[in-house]
Image (cartoon, rainbow, N blue to C red):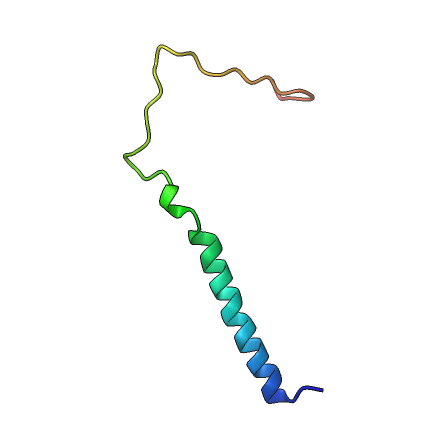
Length: 59
């Protein structure tokens, strides 16, 4: 059986580890993110891709 102090310490450690894991998950690969001003504009001569959904639609 854990004492109250041991439980509090365990919760603190788990909260810190969860924060580190969440921070890593957010920033992992963010160096490859597309920043404003870096995106390419599509060629107006190329038609848009057509997508025909299957099933019920509102059209």
